[in-house]
Length: 532
Image (cartoon, rainbow, N blue to C red; front, side, top):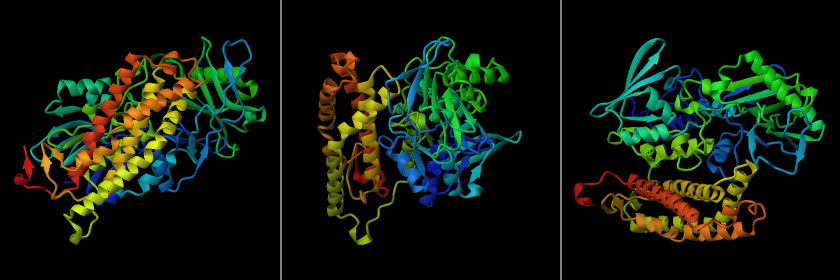
């Protein structure tokens, strides 16, 4: 019986498997599809041999350190998203598009040479083949005394496997809708699962390959926004390779999932071609189309997901981040991330949280140094120095997050989202730093579940929230870009209270997680060491 079974071979599941493999832990990974990668999906064009991304395309090094570090560690090459040239806007179908006064609309985004699928290929290659099981659809999860029983459908038969720990790295809505839990999950947890929108589930994407990037030759970037009533593709972008020789345009659909499902493929192809010709003239008509509708993916889209959210989805519900069944069952995936939910970064943040719970980094002190207070004191000092060193950069990080929301045409809750993103990114990195320090808490007291070292770890954060909010508001007042957003330019008391509540919730999540990291760095303690 394996120690850990991971269900879901997307980025979170693969990253967790990779970290367990590196730590010599016993695991198995089960995936329903006949491929790894989940929503990361690259397809090869016959026309020009370009690998096109029909799932996630970009990552942002300035605000997504985990995915940036992973891509570098895997030795993958990247390139900047092409944004140079005119950006077009088409307001009416019978007129020529106009050139917009915008630049760098993707906010420093980068792409992986050879497509995001290369990320999946590189990670899978590092895992033992006999631990990867494709074509296994999860049916039920049952608690036993000391382990968990999983039932899968595989090749038209039911297969049962047991494990001491199980990670469900799947969209919460799919689990709630399709998987039987015994004992049943409580009502509040099920509601949290239903309320968590599945990233990309309602989306469809097309990439069209061409013999040459004719739009670049005309001085255009390939970026375009279409706003008329007949719009099919509201957002278009350059999807060429790093050199521009393998040419392609990419776009997202505006049509809702229910309507897309009624349109025959041939008719959809004509609609796509017509839309691109409206924007880029006749040369755009003759392209090789690659369409992927995630709403038609049984292993991505739930029934609830077929109704697109009316506001920006919220991720990281605390109920989805807590272990169940006496630390035998865990939820994972980008939707459970405290930071970066709905992005590749969130999938990696979730995997890191799970790794800290299942396989904490071992204490690296020598036997002679164990239980020495000086060593923990040194670790506390090093951590405090790191926290202090990061604080001057938080405003710059806030400005980068804010700029990304502005360039993506978001118009509401800009300050709130950018501040929360900044602090959650900061806390995510702080947890990583804390995990890597060679604490040994075997002889440290534990009072009501809290390590005696926890207050010392938390001390350097005392004024971080207040300082960042003050600096962010001062920046907002001086920002020309925010002058058209009165609520952001001069936030009111109610808006500031909402921001404060969000940041307080992020702090509570970090406080609990950092305490868990410290507790995990101890050998099992006796009952006499605990004070209840």
